[in-house]
Length: 238
Image 1: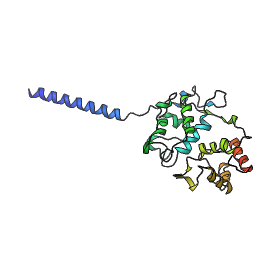
Image 2: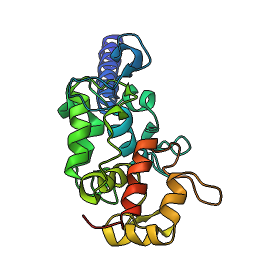
Image 3: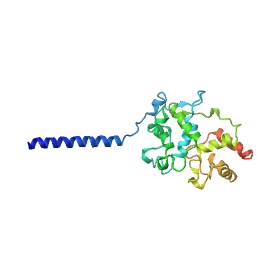
């Protein structure tokens, strides 16, 4: 009788341990890792200068992640908070992205969270930036590159050209609450101040004596020329 009681007792403990393990595993579900080449027909990337209306990762999505997410103490290669490094295509799509379905992609859903769960935590992305990320994911999260063939150097108004470039490439690190280098580029007046002191052109051209911006990359020659043309035309709020 005692042997039977011990057997039942041991069986119950085993069942209890199994239930505990299942609960712990369920609470630690991680995003599946994705092989980036599977999203690009086995290639490292795919051409971006095609007339299919798709969002370009290189020029429209990557700058948002670098400026707003891959920052010191956040998701750069050194800090990689919560296991996320968001500084290049391979790292961005490896986890947290569900190609073809933005609504199920963790890296997209956190953009709409509240409080400390929202990313970026200091200030939300613009609706246009969220829309670009959503469209890119829904279109398959491909590594579209060399997309600046559509850039027109003759177009350089502040509202339609210069501000969108700065929003995507710079504002994540240079806005109230996140003033990298104590520089604000979130509005026209602040941008004009950096034009007047020469720091904007010096930084985006990576001139000697200036901090090269954006960090880890450089604007295309066309984008640089658009900003220069805007400045030469009087840097108007047009």
